[in-house]
Structure formats: structure tokens, C-alpha cells
Length: 215
Image 1 (cartoon, one colour):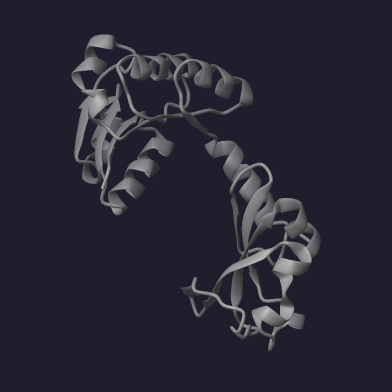
Image 2 (image 1 turned 120 degrees about the vertical axis):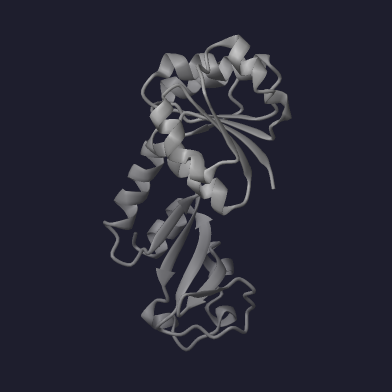
């Protein structure tokens, strides 16, 4: 369990609060709009209405005591930038800030952000890949060069073991898990037999995955 300071409770911030609640973390939520604060009360440990660009208000939160500070402000970049900078000045351990464009990310990183998230950009890429490749069921980008895909077992793999396919040696692609009837098995070994109705989690360089599986 971690303690999280979540600043900005629009749609993105609210969804973060909901998922953090599911993960049983302690969340202090902050927004300047009372209605937004009220909307997340069922999902957070505590919440306050306040201006995150106000040094006195921010200092009252004790930002040093949180494991992670998330700046989810979306519509007012100046406020996001000031909040990020203020958090670092007050001794925040880890500051994660939202950006919509690369230029925003650069300013945020220069002014205290330790990490950047691009919700719109990341979701747009996921949507483009997921719904233009008929056989991709899910997609996670790990970095600029590597990704993980969930795909059905190819027809010519059915009835063969992972060792017989030997895709790791031939194409530098790793099978990280096999899912059948909604149940995911992560303890894969070379002697596991693949079946037509199963799906797989495959990990590797994005270009290798896209080329081999015709994504």
C-alpha cells in the first residue's frame, strides 16, 4: 500500500482515483472545484478543495509524506507547471505529471517532474493498433522500442509446443503468458502445448512483433 497525493480531479484524475482505490492505496485528492472533489469522495481516503498553485495550501498537505504525487491537471497547463514545480520545491519524493504534447513534457521535466504520462497520446496509439489489426486483443507499449501484445495463437502454431516453435531464438520474441477461457498462465515453459482457442502475451521489439505477426 502506498500513499498518493492526486491533484486534478477531471475525468482522467477521477479514473486514477477509482483504480487506486481498487488497488487499496491511500489517496489524498485535491482540486479547486468542489463538485469534482465531491465526485471522488467514495474512492479516496481524504480530499480537500484548494488551489494547488498556492504555496501555503500545498505546504499544509505535507507533500513530503506521500510516496507519489500525481499531477493530473489537464486543461490549464500553467497551473500544472506551477503545481509540479511547487511539489518539488516542497520536497515531494516522486512527481508524475500529465502532458498532452512533447513540449509540455519538456517544461514539466525541467520544472520538477520525475516522470511524464501522456493519457491522450498513449490511448490514441493503443486505439490505432488495437482496432486496425484484427488479431490484436490488447497492446502495452513498454518504451519507444519494446511492446507486449495479446494475440490469438496462430493457426500453424496450434498443436505444437513453445519449444518446438522456438520463436525466441529465431525472432527474439518471448512468449510471456498463455490465456485460455479468460485464465492467464504466466509460468510458461518450452513443453507447454499451444491450442487454437488460446491467446498469448508476446514481448519483444515493436518492429519485430509487427513484422512477424503482420500488425
